[in-house]
Image 1 (cartoon, rainbow, N blue to C red):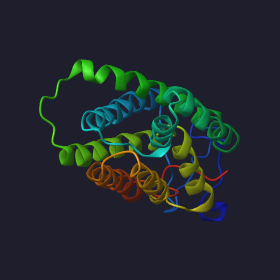
Image 2: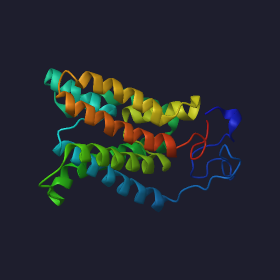
Image 3: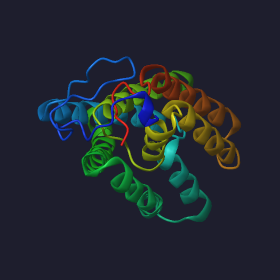
Image 4: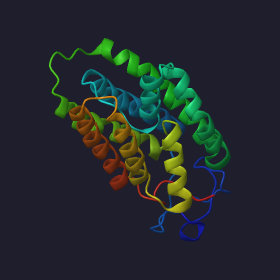
Length: 226
C-alpha cells in the first residue's frame, strides 16, 4: 500500500503520536488491545492447527513455507524442522526490518503455537472416517479463517506470509493472491511426490484458503504504511 493512499503511522499500539491511523476509506482505525491480540493468537492458531490436522490425516499437502519445507524434506531426506527454520530466517529479518518488532514477535509466538497445537490436536480429537475432498475444502477454509484472524492482529505464520503482508502493505499486492501463486508453484512441484488426485485436492484447498484472505483482508483496512 502506497503512503499517499493512507495516513502514515507506526504500529497499532499508539506509537503514531496519539492519532489513530486511517484506512483507505478515511475512517479511523481502532488499535487492538493486548488481550484481544492474545485471544486472536490463541484461537487463530488453534483453527489453523485443526485444518493442518485434517490435511495430515487425509495425506494432503499444505502451501506456503511449510509446504515448501515439506517438499524439500521428502526430496532430500533432510529433517522438516531444520528446513523450515532455515527457510524462515531471511523472512524474519525482513519482518523485523520492514514490519516492526511487534509483528515479528507475534509471528514467532503464532508459529510456536501452531507447532504445539498441531501436535496436540490429534490427541484431543479422533476422526475415524475423513473424505479427502471434505478435508481439502474445510481444512483450507479453517486455515484461511485462522490466518485472517492472525493477519488482522498483526501476526503471520512466518516465511511467505511475511513476504505476502509486506508486499500488500508497501506495494498494494493482495496477500491472498500472492500466496495463491506461490502455493500453485508448490503444488506443481508436489506432482513429483504425491499422487495426482491428492495434489488436485490440495490445490483446491489452497484456493479456498487464499481466496478467503484475498476477499476479506484488503489493503489499508488493518495496516498502515511506514
